[in-house]
Image 1 (cartoon, rainbow, N blue to C red):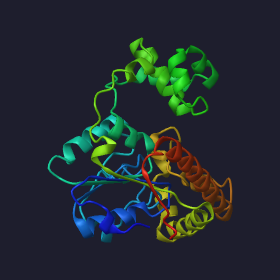
Image 2 (cartoon, helix red, strand yellow):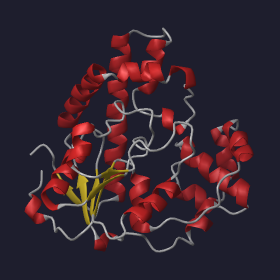
Image 3 (cartoon, rainbow, N blue to C red):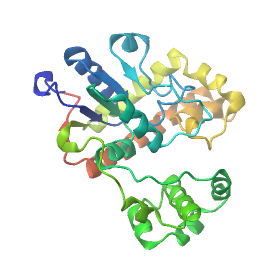
Image 4 (cartoon, rainbow, N blue to C red):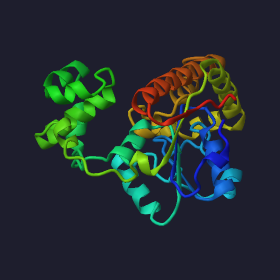
Amino acid sequence: MIELNTIPDNFPVLIAGPTASGKSALALRIAQAQGGIIVNADALQVYENWRVLTARPDAADLAAAPHHLYGHVGWDTPYSVGHWLREVTDLIDGQRPIIVGGTGLYFRALTEGLAEIPPTPPEIRALADGIALDEMIATLDPDTAAGIDLHNRARVQRAWEVLEATGQGLAAWQATTPAPLLPPAACFALRIDAPVDWLNERITRRFDAMLDRGALEEAEANWTRWDPNLPSMKAIGAPELMSYLHGEMTLAAARDAAIIASRQYAKRQRTWFRARLGDWRGIDPSR
């Protein structure tokens, strides 16, 4: 993985990597050896309602080092990268952070800055929910359209909502981005480059362990409030377990589908991190 004595103990540490790649364990090793607080940078681990399925740190890990921004957001509470960045800003004053997670947008906001875009009114969001992807794309300004993944509905909808709510394109707002909280030169930034076969095997083992530790019971607890459109319900494996509970597939089929979904998600993460965090120090967790 990496020798801890190569990590300067007076620098903030950033650890980005795909799901199941061992990044949380690495963060804990660093915190125990060198001190510091562990700060979550995973958009799903902030929510209270999926502890097992999002692989939040367990009680032993929480007791071993200070952890922040895990499971502190209500399942139906709006939460954005802006909320996260403000909370991180408040946390790290005078403390050495070890920021770990798999949400690339969080790391971009942290190291590149984040434009202060006004929040989207609920009525505009409700309107956007009913508009087809191609219709939203057709209304975007060229600069915004060129800068986002047009196959990603969440990104397109966000851009559409900004334009509709403010009359100004997302790209124009981003052009006014303030200085970053932690520029890369001020951090020790690690990108976990996990070999595909090694990671796929870990994903399989981890999902089976999640089932053993209560992931299905966790899904049952979310049954009455299940809404696949809520950000808190985007946990990988949640739709498949809900399909089992609805009688739409067997548990074995749900398990296999969830593992496939996790592997596909990890592939997207690896691609994004290599493209956007190419200047971070890559490490191989299989060694």
